[in-house]
Amino acid sequence: MRLPSWIAQHLAALRAVIVFTVLLGIAYPLVLVGIGQIPGLRGRAEGSLVRFNGTTVGSSRIGQLFTDSSGDPLRQYFQTRPSEAGDGYDPTATSASNLGPESVVDTLPNPAVKGDTGTQSLLTQVCSRSLAVGKLEGVDGSRPFCTPGGAGAVLGVFRRDGTTGPVTRVVSLNQECPATPFLRVYRGVRVECAQFGADYSKAMVTPIRGGAPASPAVPSDAVTASGSGLDPQISVAYADLQVTRVAKARGTSVAAVRRLIDRYTTGRALGFMGTSAVTVLPLNLALDRQFPKRPT
Image 1 (cartoon, rainbow, N blue to C red):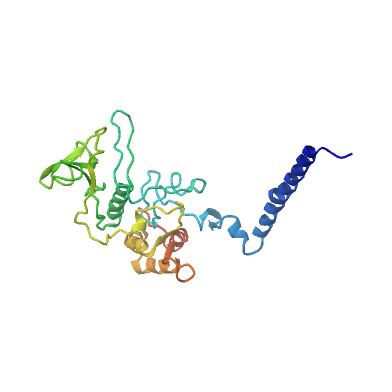
Image 2: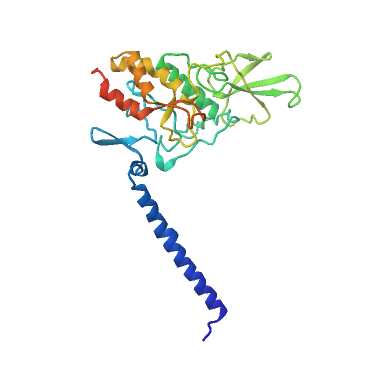
């Protein structure tokens, strides 16, 4: 007896679902798991875990924070770059901030909402991080287009005819009142602090470079997060910036710490892509083995 065409079509579709479920939902994953157990691949398949004194302390492919319970950097360790993944280096929440070069104006906190801290622009994040790193490492943390207090140095400039004509009003957009604006006068007009809820939409957003050096002492990877938020490496320049602090906290010489940096520095990918980088976790573990932190 010949089945109706619609039943035959449904049975064919059911067979296809069963076959592809077995192939792609069972067989294929099992094959990949088996490949991952091949000697030489097993460690990577299980997360490239790093062990210290018999304890798993992290992964060589995922960065982690080296801070105390208050979130302050531990002076005896090299610090990683900032992370936007969860609360920092959360592999289940890998992400970037999705903020770009045009993110220069903060969202001011609402004084009527308890605990509201507003939202920092990418520029202000970079400025505040640079200031903090500079303070930690004892160097100048200033950067172009940043205020001395670590906010984005951005003015809202009102002109008589919209985008042309004399300047009639100027507001420091990232400095909420009663803050003192980083610039007292712009084009002969007194600069105001910003008020929450005020309409500055007709102002021309004008970043001010300021007098910071063109090549800041704090490297860019110290103030910006990676695309994944999980980068386990830092630049050689950022590692060099931290050498003196780490050596002092460990009670050893700068030269001895530099030798460890060289050991955990990798070259360019494929010999020509990117730049040399320092893998932070094994470097810090090597410090713990060779130069345990002095009692305080």
